[in-house]
Structures are given as C-alpha cells and as structure tokens.
Image 1 (cartoon, rainbow, N blue to C red):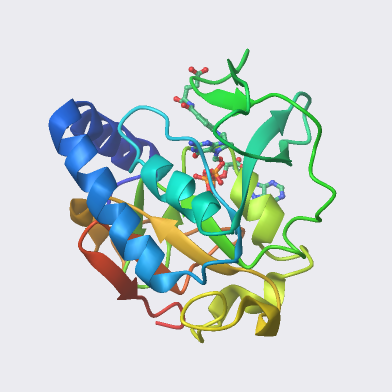
Image 2: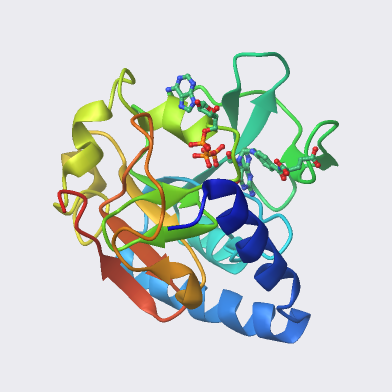
Length: 216
Ligand SMILES: Nc1nc2c(c(=O)[nH]1)N(C=O)[C@@H](CNc1ccc(C(=O)N[C@@H](CCC(=O)O)C(=O)O)cc1)CN2
Ligand SMILES: Nc1ncnc2c1ncn2[C@@H]1O[C@H](COP(=O)(O)OP(=O)(O)OP(=O)(O)O)[C@@H](O)[C@H]1O
C-alpha cells in the first residue's frame, strides 16, 4: 500500500496525461450517466473541475435546464478549512482562487444549508476504493463537511438510495457520490485510510454508477 502522498502524486500525473478531446468525451458521457440517476429537481452540490478532474460541467448545465438547483463551493480563507456554497447558473462569475489552483463562484452564499438541504453531493476525489475510501486533494474539506462530528455523519455507511433513483424529498442528508475517472476506481485496501476519512457508498464514472461497500 502506498502512502496518500505517493498515491496523489501518481494520480495527479495520470490526470495531466488526459487530452482535452478525451476529457470532453467523458464529460458528455458523465452528463448522461448523472442525468439518468439524479432526480430532475434535486438540489445538487457539485464542483468546478480543476486540472484533470472529471468534468461535471455539461451535467450541471443540463441539470439547471431541467429545473434542478446547483451549488458550488468556495473555500473560506483561514485555518478552519471550511467551504461556503454559492448557487450556480451559467451567468455566475467564476474567479481564480488566491490559494488553490481552481476557479470559484463569486456572489452571495446560498440561503440553503449545506449539507442539510442538499439531495445529492458530487464529491470530487482523486480516487475511490471499492471499500468506499475516498482520496481527496488533501485539504480535508469534505471530511470536515460530511465526516464524524458533522450533522450527516450517520449517512457515512448508508448504501441505500437517497437522491438517486428516488424523490429527493425522501432523503435524509445528501447522497454522497464520488466522481472519478474509470481508472481511479481502485480495489478495497488500495487507499490508506485514517480515522477522519469519509467513506462514500457510491461512485460515478463516465461508464456508469458503481455501488461501493463502505462496511468492508
Ligand atoms: N474542483 C474541486 N473543487 C474543490 C475541491 C476539489 O477537490 N475539487 N476541494 C476539495 O477539498 C476543495 C479545495 N481543496 C483543495 C485542496 C488542495 C488542492 C491542491 O491542489 N493542493 C496541492 C497544491 C496547492 C497549491 O497549489 O498551493 C497540493 O496539496 O499539493 C486543491 C484543492 C474545495 N473545492
Ligand atoms: N474532521 C476533521 N477535523 C480536523 N481535521 C481534519 C478532519 N478531517 C481531516 N482533517 C485533516 O485534514 C488534512 C487532510 O485530510 P485528508 O488527507 O483526508 O484530505 P482529503 O480528504 O484528501 O481532502 P479533501 O476533502 O479536501 O479533498 C489532514 O491533516 C487531516 O488530519
């Protein structure tokens, strides 16, 4: 088993090798997969892709067009490593973050509470294991938002459908879905796990949804 740092280095290097045409092709496939599995009016917390991340942009545009709601994160400056969430439309101004290599929405945070009012959370990841272990960019942002101690911690090992294939109104806390490239779906045990690490019950790639086993 490699360390998280080694794994991140390898996975980031592989992402820089993905060419733009392949990324765009995967983005379109991902849009179809996500639309088929997320309720049309769901409140979706998503992300704006940074280098090599699976591009959920085409899905977000389609999701708004069918009456859904989209929120994007913005890192709050300071040591708490917290995110605030801003409603997104194609007109939303995006600005380069001062601290991180990514674009973030300008504007006022949502009146909605995150994660409480969110149906589906598309969680960015560098890789995810069949055991539900997620490797993120290393900020711990999603572990803090969703992990032990957060209000939706109980959902951590719940493999049941929430925002997926179900009315979002019935969901208790968001369905968390790790979005990765197909080759970033790793075997159980491949990603080192620390006590604070968030596990997810589901992943989605351009090839389709994948049920994970966070209890294993
Ligand atoms: N698209 C997207 N947005 C996101 C996340 C994400 O994973 N993807 N985040 C998920 O948490 C938060 C930002 N967290 C991040 C943490 C570290 C790095 C990163 O690239 N770190 C590098 C070098 C940073 C630098 O250039 O200074 C590193 O640690 O080596 C990026 C994002 C919020 N927004
Ligand atoms: N709930 C938490 N409370 C305090 N510190 C935490 C918490 N979760 C993670 N951390 C710290 O944050 C740092 C990064 O954690 P980790 O490597 O798991 O990030 P990640 O899940 O890859 O990142 P991200 O969620 O931002 O994509 C670690 O130093 C870890 O100790």
